[in-house]
Length: 391
Image (cartoon, rainbow, N blue to C red; front, top):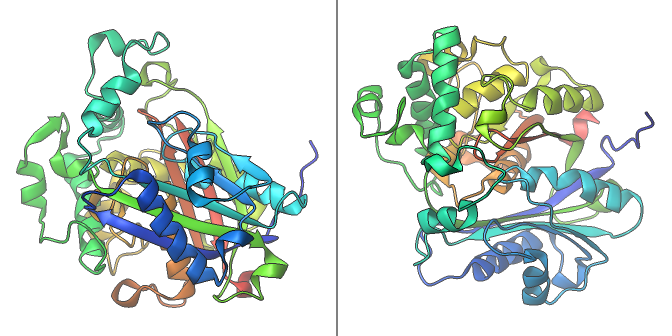
């Protein structure tokens, strides 16, 4: 199979967030617009410079049209594929190809949600979106998804490999410790293992702290060709690789509840990046639930299958641990406005630029991002970023 070489030929040049946590009275488009404004200012660009658009929304059909109209742009490249929360990492590959083919010169990847403060909240939207879907076998049984499906996955991992609730709680505790170093994080209150384990059960084996936050928020980032990126305002962060894998939609169609498509996307991403695991300085994974972090670390190859629980134990991914994971606090403690992928990307860029203050990883030059989408780890997208020194 012939492949277009994309390694290091495109870069992220501007990032922005807005309304993370609670943004009462703001619409999804307004939040998205504010994040876009910040990203443009960060890059030293203007809205007229944007001729490529990547965006998705779980609740509104033809969402790219809404965004195009609201921002007042006329893009020559549009990508609106929605594969869940991983979309805003998966968008990178088509954007890279569009830039390299000359179809556009600056691509905006953007997302906004007001799910926390909107009158039409997350539960109502989920019911409307999933009701009477004939393709989802378990729908007639009215599971509390996504928690129910991910809880099944966690329970199976515990059964097969001896993963403990304490190890799941270690993921939540690590995320909170990172969040306490991040002034933008929504949840920064003190937390301990006993509190996590004794909290209200949501879907066995998950307590409320095993589940991601429900917040408002918007994230945006801008991509250009590397040659142009070097002439812009901020230090460019280069994309070594981006790969996406989709194996299933529903949990009942997973061949193995303990293996996700990250096994595929991760292998391809490392191969294309020409880099190994020991060279990764910081990891940002989509932690919709605590089991997601464990599965991602296994399937991406940071530890063997079944050893993820032991890998995260005793603060190993918390500040001061052996591997910095979700340094902003992740979806568990920082921000999770229904889909998180854009925020994992933004945190990776901030780390590689050296902009993270108290949570900064010293001399970070490489970052791995992994997105998760769907009600059962259905879609996974893996991206590896680096600074100029690594190219």
